[in-house]
Image 1 (cartoon, each protein chain N blue to C red):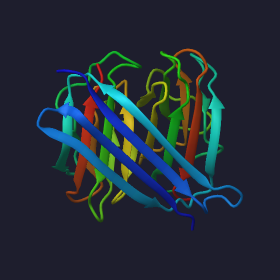
Image 2 (tube, rainbow over the protein chains, first blue to last red):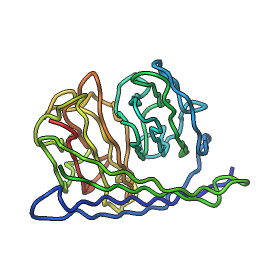
Image 3 (cartoon, one colour):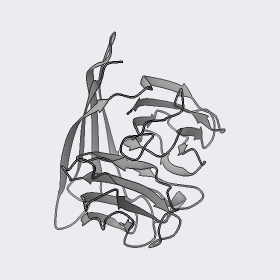
Image 4 (cartoon, chains in turn orange, brown):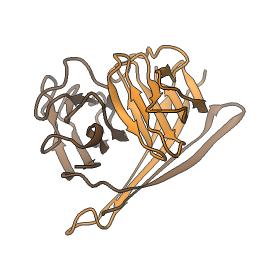
Length: 129
Length: 139
């Protein structure tokens, strides 16, 4: 596959988190996607047992190894989504409507399960070589 | 209760031959924990882990909203990000869940039902500076 570019913009702002300063930060990046796993925007129904969101094991060697950019959102209105790495170590919990974007590394897989019920996860996973 | 607005936009015209990627997500957060931090840290270098929480992250499932940005522009100065079981202690050796290359950033609602109380950062080389926002979700 030819290399691709993912453009990312993230903004965080608040005028009442602190009394004396306002928070307003926007960051942008254009990252190169050159890995084997290139999974576009996907939705999947989860259960209370872990399911991998990557199709094949993450295996790249750059920047800490096994790197991929991952976006995920909890589209449910009641249940949480729980994310864990390849050692079943939980690292994120998405309440209804919450999302994350991060470069995973050092793990061959990303797992997700529901706190209850069968909420739907929306995700994108783009591996770096 | 304070509100924090978060917006994420992702786009690409060449990821897929038959599909253009372009979407934006927004959320309004209401962090209500005991610690709300904005900071910048010059990492100590390879072999030394720097914790970023001021005290143990607690509340339901130890949740926190975390934004991290590696300000380095030097190739190779990536930063490993790990969760720590106890505040002020190192994470497990060789066990990181995220890595920030030069210029890269992340946003994540962290949390764990088995408990974690802190995050630490370790540079692969050099002393990259990391800017961060840590907002504990509940007390």
